[in-house]
Image (cartoon, rainbow, N blue to C red):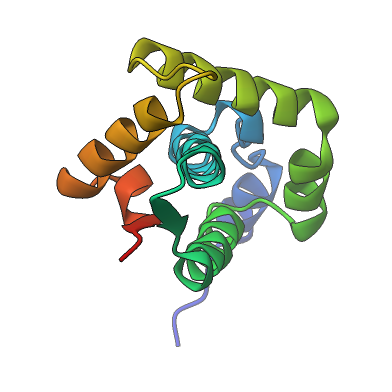
Length: 133
């Protein structure tokens, strides 16, 4: 059995852990939360598109596991998800995306068009949606 020198152990213990960036800056997580919000707006506004609710629930669980694997605690994750300012930020980015894609609140079909495009392109947003039959 090989022993680790005491000086090496001391150096390892003295090295600070790499700090995680705030969840609000974590791109993968934020991109998926924004996509989920966009899909939710489409499904609520467009009468010919539904949400894949069970699939979305599974994706949300995967996203939480991803955050935990990155080193975020459950408390940090829950605090981030419950933060009203963060939720407003995510909603604002989603609304901006929809507006840039041509969505108009007074025109449900504009949301349907975006939804159909997202489904056809098999984007993260599109994966959360399904056309009604």
